[in-house]
Image 1 (cartoon, helix red, strand yellow):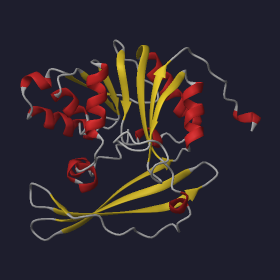
Image 2: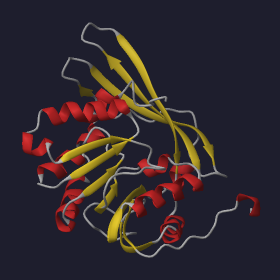
Image 3: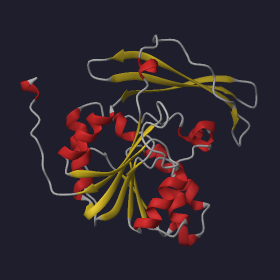
Image 4: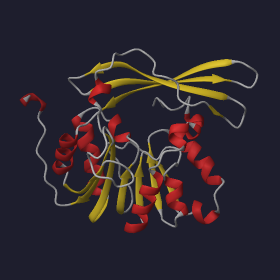
Length: 271
């Protein structure tokens, strides 16, 4: 299995945009409200998962990347034993997984659902989530609200640099990103996150994290959730629980409750 995070996993927690992201309190507060157990899909390095465990809740973290899970395990070793005991990490594919037990809350923070570029994969993931929720359990699906201006930008050019950050070993890193190509038919962008690394000895390195990113519009996501057996309880435009549409482009944060199972069969030959 190719691990797309292998080259940059140790840098992830130090990226300023991730380090200062304001979503952690949102997920911790919801986890405390609904109580344990919690399943986090796409847990990565534990940026959200570990604060939930610190809050006294049992949490299972699922991720496909062994490198990102390795970073998470290293971070957990620095936590008190009682925090470590509340966490279980599982390497698995979010499109199809089977875990022991069910959960009051399933979260998909910070866009991993948008790495699923086909409807079949999206529905399969939501099916797996549905199976692992208790009756009337809650799913939080975190997407970006597509900016139409951004989607028509020319491809190929690197965006302005993000703030520089430093690593414990003395490396200095500047990150840029670019959209390599648009596929408007499939609503998919090919994205590159480019890390320009200066080592302590002056050696320079360029690391590229490349991946496809599927964008979903509000009503498309609502129909997917309904198709997979969820009813939408809240739709937020930000982690401060501001309403959808109060800022643009803002966020698409769906809080959805498990209901009965109703699915419309997907037949690509009809389209």
